[in-house]
Image (cartoon, rainbow, N blue to C red; front, side, top):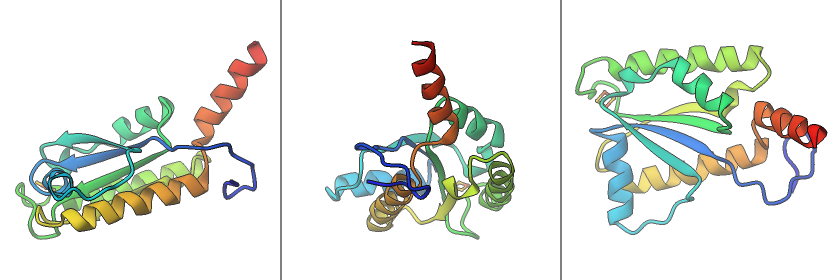
Length: 154
Ligand code: FES
């Protein structure tokens, strides 16, 4: 398999962090499980009270620690249980995309989905979509550089 930059990859399985708000994103993921819908195990779900708590610094630390992609799953716009948390998160995700573009990691490695707690099927589809997308992009360049350094050190 080749990533977007043409590098040949052996069975690259991306590590994706999914920050899910407790009321909708997490509930939709839970529903997908209850419905026995299969979706890739590449997503590591982090439950947060509201996407308004999603912070850019957490995302940058996750990339530094080796995450290949980060996605935020919150309530539908207008339905955030804390009124505007998901709108704040949307702005932070857009800002994070610009930062990642500037530092060479690539803003396409992050994104946001809005869904209700009843959208288990959509959660499973989104999980498949982001996994394919990040698989196509290849490993996070920070992780790739660190593993090259480790190999060079022996
Ligand atoms: Fe779900 Fe705010 S409670 S995004």
